Every structure is written in structure tokens, then in C-alpha cells.
Length: 448
Ligand code: PHE
Image (cartoon, rainbow, N blue to C red; front, side):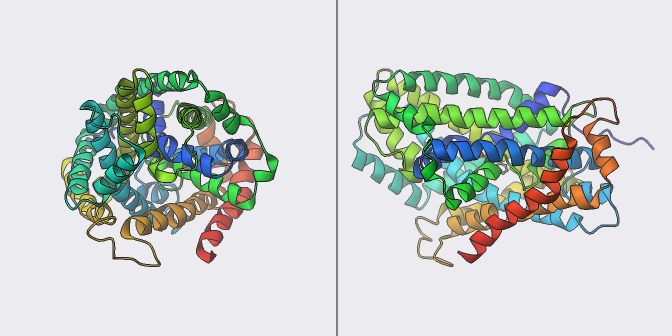
């Protein structure tokens, strides 16, 4: 019987750009700048760098190697590697977490589409701070508009996933990721040449050690996991599409470095501008929607830079949401044995329906609260603060305690054909440091 070849990435650059596309998202451009702002600037960045390189790079390698070794979706990969262990149950957590994250991520993606549209029609120019705050509040609490925007964003995401890996995801990443990179550098240069930008640089790179608290470490851990798409199965899924000749360690270093670089450039693009115009860097989630348009109104060529900014925010968001949808779709196609076309359509519809509750959580459903959180925050907290760390613990334990060490080394060294250094460090992190450090985040969220 002829077996159909499994779809996969067809080039090294395509695979890398797709994984970077998953990692670089709203987490870098929207969340990182205000989290840095709220957590003391340079001190936070230092802790973030240590965690991202020291802890997250080994975890990224682990997810890629599980995916590539299992050559299957997040449930199937565990079964393929070790048919006896029950670890494949953790795959269901990944499917659920991807599903939930996508349901609120695409609501924010919808807001981004709205702001992109408004920038293109120049309707955000010259609005005062109060007007912009009201504008944002009116958008997120409107009865219908956030729903339509969410539908549109999900539709765009599904239109890429339906074409599969090589023809959909890889192609899209190859076209849009370079554009994203060029545009963000342009923005950073514009921001750094504003008078008064030096204060922002000082805030970003001046390290005040007294600002490092336990909370800084927890925030940095949570932010780096989310930003690198770890603990949720997206990287396992993309790893399963990687060719056997790719170097997993090098690829992980490239992905982590690029993600950090994007976050830092986003910080460079946003924070100096915030300081140049005397705004507060700790302005929270509204930073990019409320503060930035005011800044753009005041600088020469601002309306063009505004379009560029919301365009890159859109690309960053959609390449991440594609990886989330792909994680669910790959599971449905391979485990439930239905075609990609049907799987994409059905899962997108179900996610869109759940997302509707998130989209309405600031408006029609604002009074629905559980543990003091509205639906949006509830889903976000459950997925990012609980499911994601639990997922990472399972992955680390599986690779270091369940899988045979020889198999891990074999996969990292491409069956001994490439040299890999620092494996001792790798195993210490994955076996001990990661599970313990991540358990701390979990305990903190569950208890406080
Ligand atoms: N890493 C993405 C971001 O920074 C979010 C994401 C998380 C995407 C988990 C996929 C999986 O926005």
C-alpha cells in the first residue's frame, strides 16, 4: 500500500521563519513593552534574558525533539515515542490550551484589525488622550463589532491553515516575516531619533538591582514562556514538520534569540517614544491602543508609521494564531482521521464560538464573573498561568525521565552526524531546574 507522505517544512529558512512566527506575536509587541514598564525596566530585561536563554532554550529544544522524533501531533508524538507511558494524555492539555489561547488571542487580533483599518483611514489622528481611551473602551465593549472583527481574524487564520504546512504556513511565513522584521527596525529608528528618547533608553537599559524581586522573576518566567510559545504544544507540532537534517540546538538558539531581539526592538520602538512625550510606560494593556496613537499624531510622518505599526502587529498576531490553530487541527486530522479541510473548518467554528464569549466579556457579558474575573481574563488566566506551566512540566519530565537518554542524544545529534555541545547542562536544566522553577510559578498562581 502506498503511504501518503506527511506534509512538512520544505526548507530550513521556512521552518525557522514559521517557528519564529509562532513565537513573535502580541506577546512581544503588545505585552512585553508594558510588562517591562510595570516591572522596573532594565532590571526586568536582565532577568528575562537569563530565563529566556538559560531555561527556555533547553525547553525549546525539548519540544522540537519530541515533535520530530514522534513525527506526529501533540497526542500522537508521545504515543509514537513511548507507547507504554500514559504521557500522551498531556497532549490533550496542549490541544485544550491552544484552543483556549486562540479563543482570546483572536479577539485581540480583531482589535488590531480594527486599529489597522482606522489608521488606513487616518481616523485616529489628533484625538486627545480622553478620546482615545473612550475609543478603545467603546470598541471592546460594543455589542457587535468585536464579534465581527474576531470572526474576520479567525477566518484569515483558517485560510492559511487550510492549505497545510508547505503551501500554507511555510509560504506565508517566508513572505511576511521578513517584512515584519524590516518594518520594526524602521519604527525603532524613528522612535530613537525623537528628542527626549534618551530617557527611554535609560529606562530600558539601566539596571537597578533593587528592583529585582520574586515577582520580577515570576513575571519574567510567565512572559518568556508565553512569548516563546512554550508549554502548549505549538513547538512540538512545528517540530514534527522539521526535516531530519536540521540542527535542533542551533534552530532553538536562533528562534529564542530572534524572539528576544523582536521584543527588545519593540521596546526600543515604543518606550523611547513614550518617554519623549511624557507618558507612563506602565500604562498596561492599553499602551499600544491608547498611548501610541497619540504619539503618532505628534510626530512627522506619524500617520504612515501608525499604519506600519498596526500592520506589523497584525502579522505578528496572525502568524502566532496560525500555530495555535495548527496544533489543534493536526491533532484532529491525525487522531480523529478527518481531512484537513474539514478539520480546519470545524475547529475554527468551535473556537470562534468560544471566542465570542471572550469578545463580549467587556460588553454584554461584563457582569458574568467567576473568581472576580470576566470570561476573557478567566480563559487567559487558566491557559497562560495554569495549563501552560503544567504543559511545560510534563514535557520536561517526559524528555528527561521517561525517554531514554540515548534517544534524546540521538535526536539532538541527528543520529550522531552532528556534534552537540553542553548536553550536561541541557539535562540538568530539563531534568531538575525546569520542573522545579515552573512548579513555583504554578504554586504562586494557585495560592495567591
Ligand atoms: N508566542 C506568542 C506571542 O508572543 C503567543 C503564543 C503562545 C503563540 C503560545 C502560540 C502558543 O504572542
